[in-house]
Image 1: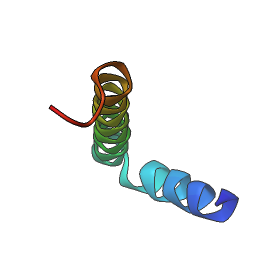
Image 2: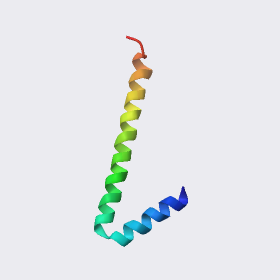
Image 3: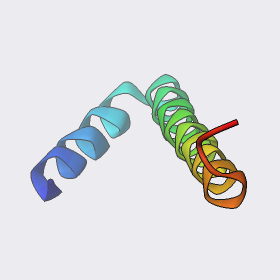
Image 4: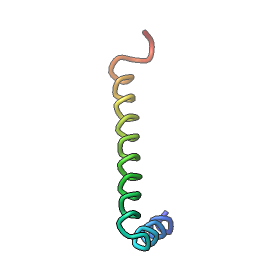
Length: 51
């Protein structure tokens, strides 16, 4: 995993501000997806999976 992170950083530096914008957008999307999954898990833990 470390190699892929270093490669992504190298590409971001080479692309300049546009690369940084793409990287930040990607990270924001991953965070949003993880929070959505966490909230869905919390709902099923609280109320169960059967209705």
